[in-house]
Length: 110
Image (cartoon, rainbow, N blue to C red):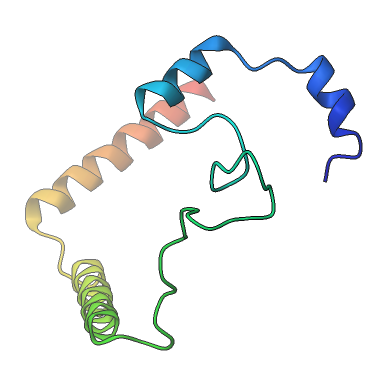
């Protein structure tokens, strides 16, 4: 809420490029929400908001939720499968070599 719209209108100036943008798009720059400059309480012809969304779940929403849940459970299953999988001989050799290098570097520092 603006307490003093007259004071605000005296101190605030709208840039000219804003007026030009409205003119380019054929938008009114005077009047109320319906561009009525004679009777400010007459709002006939104003642009209306889009219709409200339907109440509850729609069929598309339910299908989207089901497939999202299926994707989530499949993703979790893949993470569990990967985490509980066997480590191959190459990974074991690499891990042992890394541990050996780290312990030898630590013992040299001491």
